[in-house]
Image (cartoon, rainbow, N blue to C red; front, side, top):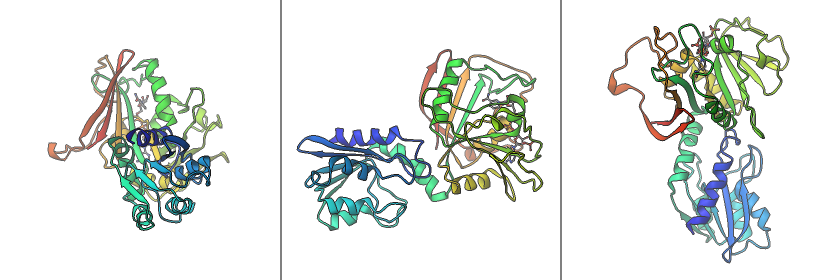
Length: 348
Ligand SMILES: NC(=O)c1ccc[n+]([C@@H]2O[C@H](COP(=O)([O-])OP(=O)(O)OC[C@H]3O[C@@H](n4cnc5c(N)ncnc54)[C@H](OP(=O)(O)O)[C@@H]3O)[C@@H](O)[C@H]2O)c1
């Protein structure tokens, strides 16, 4: 039944942003027209959604049941044993899943079907959207990247005199807290750290603070900045300066041979960061917007025109890219937030 599959997808969507480099997955076990088990994969290393749902239902009850899963059950030994094997062992009769896992070598589908289980792949657009960036991220070993920009109608993140506080409304800030909550880390540049002294935290009830990542080439870091002292979430400073050392035990300086965004992203992925949010000024934002790594671009536009010479126009490049080679986006959602406009775009 379609509704059970949609419940499973909703359970996956609810944990999007908290599973690190693992996919968010939801599962629902149904028997005799009744839901007898529900599960979500809550965090990397924890039980998978299918196992949570089967455990809730109880091994004795699941014989002959149907399990609805947002993603094809796995058939490999990773941090946990294969879910497909547990489904086979418990005597579940039917499996319906909404997205194929194209990143895994062996398929759970075949393994379960070979054991006589009725396995149905029922593609669903919500699951497709949920997993598209996850598959790319896993294949390339880079986190899923969202870039967030708050700007005036003429594309300025700040005036030529650095003023950037409250270009967009306070209601936008509340939306940004939700966005931060859904990412493992926020990446910013040393320019923003110096100009704004940001906390980059989530100031809402039950919000989870992401790690903070600062990029610097100069190594001229203001160690008095608030985020080095609030102890609310880990802080990493990425640099190619071999002499830069952290004055604090809880702040990690990561020295890499180069700090091209590709190199930094790969290192973050190996540290377990599956989704990162870029909240930076034009220098760093432009590198991400011009790259192949951006998956989602969220633009908050305030109905103001700032003018000046455009020192802080959010997208700036040295060269001019031909129109047919530009990064292009599809607007998948738009809404008014108080007086401002929010555009949510996916890279095409
Ligand atoms: N409205 C908004 O959404 C928003 C958001 C953030 C910031 N801002 C505004 O933006 C302005 C700052 O602009 P900005 O362009 O200077 O900020 P930025 O892009 O956040 O920071 C630029 C600095 O980050 C470091 N950096 C950038 N790319 C790097 C890389 N690949 N590797 C290593 N280090 C790298 C460099 O630091 P070093 O110089 O140390 O090498 C560079 O000077 C401020 O006025 C701020 O208020 C606005």
